[in-house]
Picture 1 (cartoon, rainbow, N blue to C red):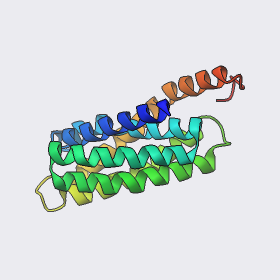
Picture 2: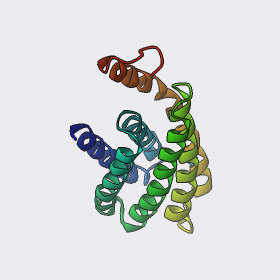
Picture 3: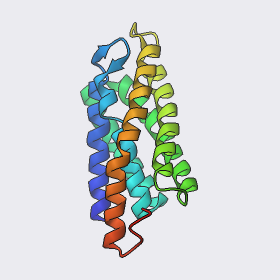
Length: 177
């Protein structure tokens, strides 16, 4: 139960901060939100690996509810609703893809589920949040997705450490997290 509460809190902080930061472009290709949001897939995937897809869905739904409320205050209702919609669809897809790939090599479930979930999230979020606002939302979406892929690759190192440690604590096979 403690792990679930920590993951829900982490999800809320990650998503709400990303929704606030997405309002601030770095350039025509990237916003500051692109640097924080991809970590939400790490949270979902660790929960899924350790506690299973049911617990991961619980973290997503709870984190969603808290993040949408916080985001409405931090970033406004349009971004909060766009984020909430994209978040739910992409995270549920991430959980499904991860669970289907669960038995493959240790790096495949988190990398492929994050890449697929991120593509869906990026398309939905940027279209809903920034269409007809004057922001270069298509180029921002392309840049955002590129950063999400790069972060998914970088998160493989802490993913391997987290799952390996959990496996060692449980007395499992340390060589194949």
